[in-house]
View 1 (tube, rainbow, N blue to C red):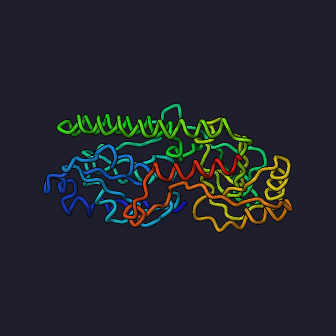
View 2 (cartoon, rainbow, N blue to C red):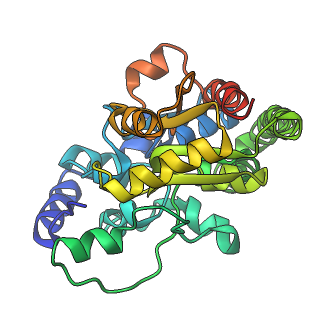
View 3 (tube, one colour):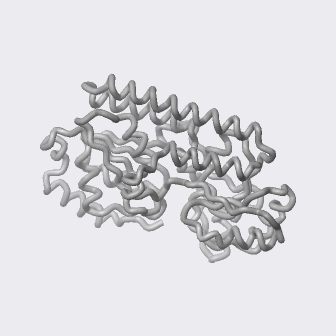
Length: 324
């Protein structure tokens, strides 16, 4: 993943400080909250609903992928000028540490830190093309280190926990509106709980218990929630786009062995690997379905009325079809 150099980031931070960084929330009287990606942004919007003195912004609103995002000078200025900064906090957010060095008054909430022991390590399951193998094939040395799955928002159970923790922080930092924040959060968590129970019911009634991804796999938290099995081409944060013959053959064999009705891709996929798996399997009447990882939603998506719960409802319908 591309990273900002320390020198460049230092220059950006210095520019922000010179411009009077950290004072904009006082100028317009707004309590400012910035979220890096769409799911966290939508959670905060629901928690702060009806509170006119609160301003919520989505940082990555142009469709940039979480795993390759690099902040601009304007992004750094926004972050250091807000009251609360909500971000995922995984490997892809390493740039945040430097961005916050000159922003001591900003309250930063890392979803990965809030997860604590519930954060899961990325795992390489049977048949999955690991990045270790890719690096060896390309002649790179690999230093083994633990990497955690960043995609915590794709679990409704996680969402309920994280929304409550966000609410607790907002109540502390903006106590004048704590009653409204608390009431909104209680209502929103109830809607997430209802949807969570719908997932549980769908999985319980399903014919199959396995999902097959011919793509990256960012849905481990979701599959673990409902005790689903899975096979996939790559881990969730993999940069790979080309699957090896061995990976394709393995997935094709599993498709036939399990007699699954569908191969799954994630949003933005060209479905090339999925089509190759199906052709290799010689399978008929197998669908290619898409689960939305919500990593690259845009300002236009927000304007069009896209919400976290709507996308999780769509994902539920996809899961039902994949397990029928």
